Amino acid sequence: MKVVRTRGECAQARAELGLGTTVGFVPTMGYLHEGHLSLVRRAKTECAAAVASIFVNPTQFGPTEDLSTYPRDLDGDLAVLEQAGCDVAWLPEVADIYPPGFSTFVDVEGVTAVLEGARRPGHFRGVATVVAILLNVVRPTRAYFGQKDAQQTVVLRRMIEDLALGVDMVVAPTVREPDGLAMSSRNSYLDPAQRAAAVVLHRALQATRTAYAGGERDADRLRTAMTEVIAGEPLAEPDYVSVADPDSLAELATIDPARGALLSLAVRFGRTRLIDNVVLPPSR
Ligand code: AMP
Image (cartoon, rainbow, N blue to C red; front, top):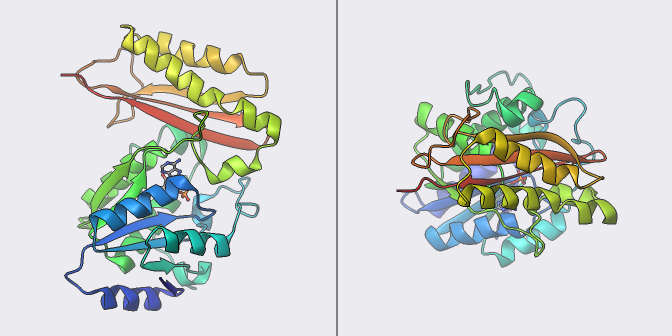
């Protein structure tokens, strides 16, 4: 596995893979877990070469968020990337991505106004900007993202299409711990009691999915069902629960089974904020 740092080194490594080579790209912020590695392995299975980036992107963190404490383990990350079959690991510095004078940002409108975008102003501007830069340097055939960050996939799909970035987007399923908690680098912030309590996100989503499967179509009743499960966990403070259209992310009044829905939520445990979601697929 080749390890590169600057934009120029990464572009060079990409050129050495060959113009006609299919390249699968996995952007990450590091502290890698099975969720990330499932994307790398899939990229390697579906493409001739896999490239991963590790970059804790400052522009997607709000002023009161966890940029300075975000967990890091570069040596461990490089070892597991290599095991997963990654060909090129790109580890840029902040100044490689945002050199002096940097002043161009990507703002995706509409779908960024709700859910995470409403609670984390500027977050998706930072995400879209960095992903546009990463894609332009790596020039992958396919880019791999996790369903775990559902709104991010909607925002980036829009950007890739609107800006004609010419990359196929692949969204892979959320990888979970045995008890159902979605894997996340931020799970490392949880103390043992919070870690045990954090399974409530998955339980709330499952309860709501079961209610939907049982015929419930009223979105408010489904939101209430999610809220009630979270309320049963004293360490959990709900931020939002949502039953939204899977494409527009607009909150629904009633679920149309022909369109399905995205159930999502954000819950705080002390200073740690976790998100999760499930898709209710359209039924034919
Ligand atoms: P992050 O390092 O959190 O920015 O995540 C990098 C990529 O890994 C994003 O596309 C995430 O959606 C994806 N990812 C993070 N956690 C998971 C998970 N538990 N399952 C699947 N994909 C994930």
